[in-house]
Image 1 (cartoon, rainbow, N blue to C red):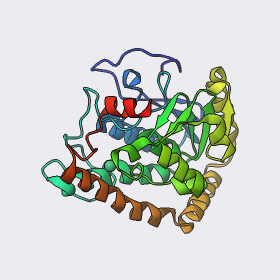
Image 2 (tube, helix red, strand yellow; image 1 turned 30 degrees about the horizontal axis):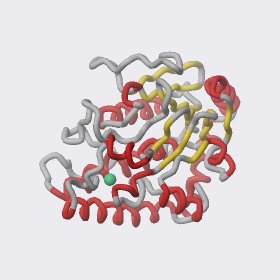
Image 3 (cartoon, protein in one colour; image 1 turned 45 degrees about the vertical axis):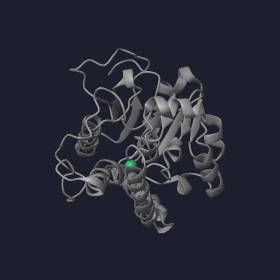
Image 4 (cartoon, helix red, strand yellow; image 1 turned 135 degrees about the vertical axis):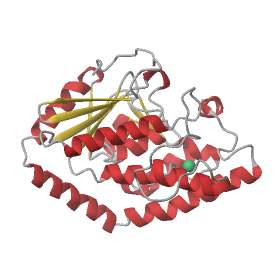
Length: 290
Ligand code: ZN
């Protein structure tokens, strides 16, 4: 695994996700630092393989998810040379059909059901505690990844944002906003698209801990080691118990109902604007946010 601040450029042969086990902790690292760990499908499926491996390995008690370089994840890949949304991958999240030979809303719904909503739900069910180590950007699709983790430790420089309302879309595909933050804060977060600081995220209960930038790795390690002293089944059942409580509070059905609104927005954009993202590319999103 590279050092936490490794900013080595992506090479074509670079693995999009790194995996290493040290003792009872599996370290899973998003590894596209040149693109602030933007998630393409290659990364999504590599991440799924890493989580599967961690779940399967009897030696692993706790998983740590982090990002190589200075950022956790800037979101889904909407503009890097490695963008691969048009390519087929072996589907794992569900039995819905492949998107690549379909058109319009049918294609979008198929793809996002699999790689966004489906995968996030699948990862949330990993029966071992997952700790997100967040530094720098945790934006849009990056939020989805952090939110499916059980605990979030953020460094002082971390920030959180969901700016996709600028695309006319009501938030990212995994719409956990009103469950991970109070509803009024969720509205402010969406309406403004502003960055939420790590401190603010802590104040509203969205992250467990904020630490100095240089202490993120050691702090997460220490937390993971402590959790790893608990019995495996106890941890798995405790995780399921809290996840079930969230679902009883409407998370599961809430995600499904907003996913429909999300696809209404994509379809509206496709009918009326340049594309399903409302003509907003990476540069346009940056300009709008400045
Ligand atoms: Zn979408």
